[in-house]
Every structure is written in C-alpha cells, then in structure tokens.
Amino acid sequence: EYVSEFKDGDFYVISSEFAEIIYDKTELIKMKKVIATINMNSSMPIKIYADNAIYNDINNNTNFYGNVLMTYNMHIINSDNLDLIFEKNLAILSNNIIYKNLNTKLEADKVELDLITKNTKISFSELKIL
Image (tube, rainbow, N blue to C red; front, side, top):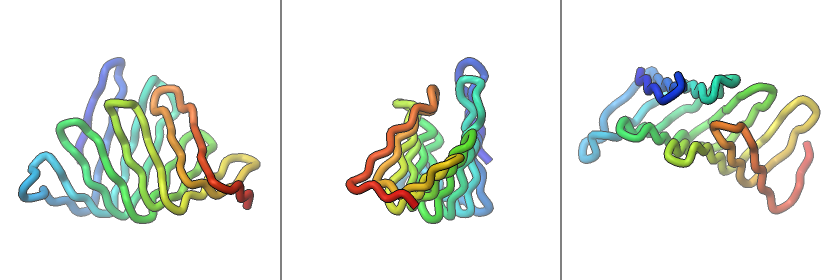
C-alpha cells in the first residue's frame, strides 16, 4: 500500500494484491488487483478498481488498465484504461467507456475528470444512450 498526502489534507491511497518494481525504472511499480482512493478538496472520494496498474511513486501518476471501474458521488464509469495525472489534477478514461449516473447510461470515447472540481468532460464521436 502506498499513501500520498497533499496540501490541505488531500490524499491518494493505492493498494494491490501483488506488486513488483520495474527493474530498469525503479520509481515504477507494476500492480495487480488494484484499489485506489483519491480524496481531494474535502469532497466525496473517488474510488478506482482495476485488474492492473503502473504506479509512479515519485509523482503518483498512475496508469490503470483492465476492467477499470471508477466511482464518485452518483457516477459510475467502466473503461479499459484510466490515467491519473496529478500535475494536472486530471483523470482521463479511455477505451470501451460506459458512463452511468442516476438517469443516464451512455457509451463514450473519452472522459476527463478534474480531480479538484469534479467537472467532467465526456467526448464521443456518436452519442449512444443505453
């Protein structure tokens, strides 16, 4: 388990059942069966579940892949990939996205989530409401 604390009490916790350091890039940790929690700006936490992730223990950036599930507030997003970029306070989901909230279920090409404001940008080439 890795815990990173930021200013104002914000934090990021990532854990996995299995982890190994990548030989030629020791700041990168390859993880399997991953659970992560992001708590920013004293708001509802963001939870992320994935089969795999590559975590950078210097800047906390993380690439999740394989059966990715992200939940926050009333939003549920499934995808193949999710990239956390802490320098930009951004989560980017891509590939086979299904977005759900209270009354909406749709397919998207890309979802960008601002980790601070929780503003969400959903991109798609063709709207498919499920």
